[in-house]
Image (cartoon, rainbow, N blue to C red; front, side):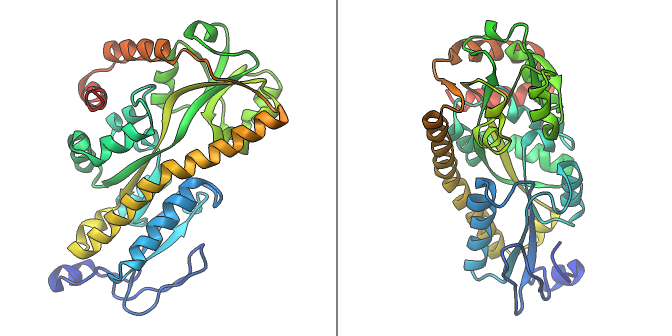
Length: 336
């Protein structure tokens, strides 16, 4: 939370939220002088793009703006898991958080549709949706439901299938027990894709694949590498069936910042959003080249993504309703 702030005094005096700030963050830097400290939390390691090209870029941009704000980063779920942290954002104990849309659906269900399979054609489409006017209604409804602001969004890479058989068409999923995360939108994705979903904790995924509890799974390339899943899977099928979303959200205290401070925060978020695609692409290219040269896993790059996309689009339009359908249609319409 912003250290030693007194909101009532800040409101009366129209000064920056914090009175003073101190304390050292994970980067080893500390704020000083008449600065307010913002906490920025996420669940990723210091080596992942969400930290290096996301959180650290936001911190640098805010502090370089010279508007009396410093940023302390708490990675790797130090301030709690996703469900705990969104509650902390709502209460103001965490100022800025980086989370997937499906996790945020716990406070406003329709935002989970951002993670619908093939909702976005690519990472650029997701970024453009949130930076343009198409997402205005979603942002307003999310704010009304949660008192939390969405400042921007990026894709942390597309999710791909792995299995011990290649998956090129929806028919190839038949008979396979595919691990999907247990959140509602991911399970809807499994239905839309025609997959037989099996829920397995991420921490248990390697062993479950090794023991044959599940036949395959889906994750971004960086996660597949980090979990050494190439040791227990023969094929990665480049389905790119879902953009792995990260939304940058801010607590109600963001509304009490001065206009100058708000601009510094939003501009820093925009800069991180602009850098993320290149960072993710660089990381994925390095991993894929390594797999190919080592023969770690066979890369299937002739997946019929059009067949998958047509299948999921029909399913979502028939099975979503209310605000969730409205969000889905606004996403698809933004790409026409």
